Image 1 (cartoon, rainbow, N blue to C red):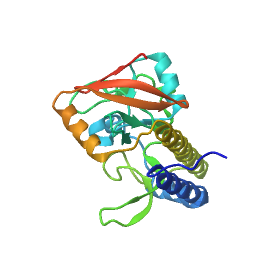
Image 2: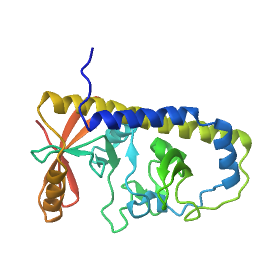
Image 3: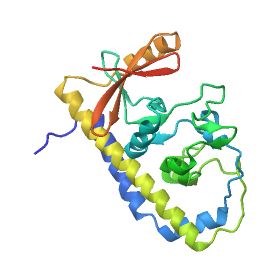
Length: 244
């Protein structure tokens, strides 16, 4: 029998499993109804392709692998990082697409408002702006969210055929489920990794090292990818893969 996870990984694992059960129990028809009611239509504003509007794009391993084969410099450790050990090494559950380095944090593949890899774009880009997970609102009430950036981009109240709404609902749920399963795999891996190596997550070290980073220091980041950890150095907004 595998040893139990230490804290805080055990509590996070339990919460993640609860979210997965809730996701699987969410009625597909209700989600499809909301998709039709919102009637979102992309107007090609490309705001969703910038970190200023949308933060980091979480890549599943298959997406990161495919994009990395196209351009090895196309992805980097996702931010914010999940954990930091007492030695100042950070750990994160996966990759994000690199940015062009402009003020908006535009996606590396965004070229004059158009995606250069549109036919090969990541799953999250295909389903956006739809989502299906629970998070707190501005008043702290936790409830389901089904669309990101409502009324902040795109067009609304367009006609979405029922078959299309069901397809979107299924693809969005599948992505959310894959992301939660990836997170569970990461928590299990990193929890046992910390236990085997006598490590623990130290919030003060996390904050101190991030302060050092903002002042120009490089930081070491271990990225969970395909069941292993890959080492990177991040300095001044640029990430470099390390060889060990």
